[in-house]
Length: 90
Image (cartoon, rainbow, N blue to C red; front, top):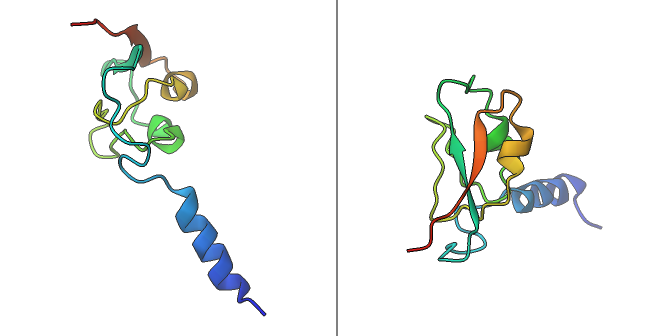
């Protein structure tokens, strides 16, 4: 018989993304999230909902090395502080 407490703990650990769980973004991202510090109220909903864990809790910084540009942070931001900006190809 399995220990339910351990099973739940194991499931919880799997539900948390780790830095770079899907790898580096590379050159394929089309849009990048840009945060307007004047509009941001530091509610951290962007941090909570980011599927790649690319947003830091301290200072609300976006790690573009791992950000996939999915836009979830912009959709969840209640103040509209995050906008999706088209990437410039170099």
